[in-house]
Image 1 (cartoon, rainbow, N blue to C red):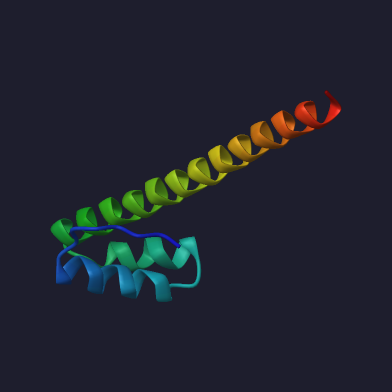
Image 2: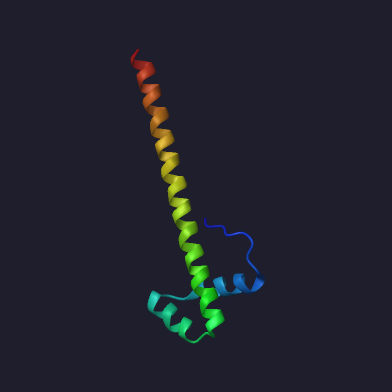
Length: 80
């Protein structure tokens, strides 16, 4: 689950709309219909979602690494 804190109501509303768009091409088409300021906000929000997703993947991967390290330590302790 992605969480982005500190958004304004306008940004939340825009993200809600962006989630309803079916394809990247449709997103680009929708962005072309926005004012320059709104387009910049939508692009920034898309980048924030991307970064939040990357953060989530990194945290998940670190969790696996930690778990693998713990399992390795347990296996070594059992062998001794």
